[in-house]
Image (cartoon, rainbow, N blue to C red):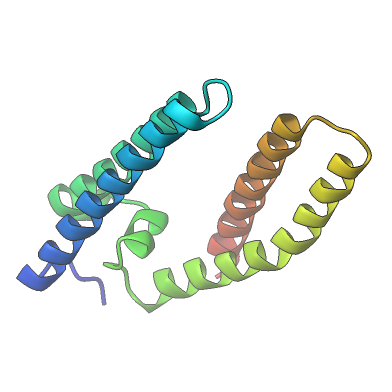
Length: 142
């Protein structure tokens, strides 16, 4: 059974997580801006801001229009039913299993002299694609 409302404890926990994530993002980004190589701090701050905004949009959608949200949004915000949670759990398990060989391939590529920045970018992209494909396939089959 889907739940459409959050309790006051859940709201406080979400607010606390958002504030802790934002604080950690700002501190880490500013430290990387000052001491990290190149424009690493700016990249972290922009990527973190995009991720935080996406998460907040998902939370807003789940509270304002719960009938129009996707399976992923219901499962990720813990407001879905048993099926939504099972689909997310199974797809994250597939991603976890795939992350080991993907990371090994990335380490081997770095060992052969590939640019570290490119390898890490491709590793992150590959993991995102594996997670999205796994979620889509499992969602369609169940």
